[in-house]
Amino acid sequence: MPFLGYRCSKSQEISCRTLTHFLPLAGNIIVPLDFGMPVSRYVSGDSVSLTIVQCDRDYQYLTGNHQRVADEFYACVPQLPPASRFPDSFVLPAMDPGGLDSTAWNIVTKSRFFSVDPQPPTFPFNKVRATFILTKSQVQNLKNYVSANKPNLRHISSFSVISAYVWTCSEKCLAAAAGRQETKDDEPVYLPFAADCRERLSPALPSTYFANCVVFVIAESTHGLLKGDEGFLIAAESIGEAITETLYGKKEILDSAGWPLDFGEFFGRRYIGVAGSPKFDVYEADFGWGRPKRYEFAHLDSERYSISLCKSREFEGGFEIGLSRMKIDMDVFEAVFNEGLQMIGKF
Image 1 (spheres, rainbow, N blue to C red):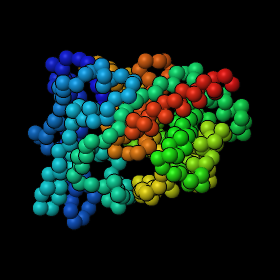
Image 2 (image 1 turned 90 degrees about the vertical axis):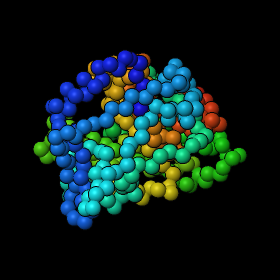
Image 3 (image 1 turned 120 degrees about the vertical axis):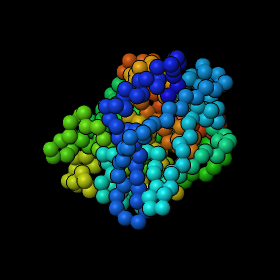
């Protein structure tokens, strides 16, 4: 959900030029009802609809970092059309021509995520959104703190320390909300995420590979451990070891190919999902109509604890963390987040 401040007179011309280089982007995914795998089909006359939203909301309000009412964003979220149904197949409004082999498709159809028709959101969410910025120096402070206290930890990265820090802050918020809800110290909590495994294949895929090549990684701990004084270090260790074991352990990378089914097992459990990556420089993407002013992940409002993560637009080497929480929880998270950074900054 990028917010752009620009004149859109050239949008149609730019989109047409782009589609001439890769016609399948204008095609459809055809899914047979009784046999076979889906196929990507383009026929003369196929096109891609371009939705340009003009709303009367306050642009500066929506693109700020401060707390903003979640419902306000959906005036800017286009709705996918329903699938077109035919006697022997249906057409999905989606594009993934490179990843629908037989194994992947069997996994998709068994997954709880598989749905022919998009589901509209239910209002009100009763949540606020906020964006938290970590500067380059703050991220380095987090890395230094982990390195000094966990010298034998093999994997320490921007992703691992940022995710660990937010994970810990979230658990401390739950502890602070004990008057509203009870969370047992031995309750297991999870942080599942996708990891790039292009370099782990033999032969390795190039960095220019234009498709998904990810595996499922799951870090696990307990509420009691993460809310404590050593919570950040425990979270960083859990994430680092999970990455090392999945990407560099004895288990074959392709053994994790069924990760959509594995992820489905976490329904009903408490977890924090991470959308995006520190490697995603979404604010540098310019398709001819200017850089985005703000990038938001709409699905966060439908999940209780998930976060978004990408490079910052405002600070070189910095990162943006997006959250959607109830107002009272966001106030506590903000206080815990800032207090923790001050403490680690003094290390």
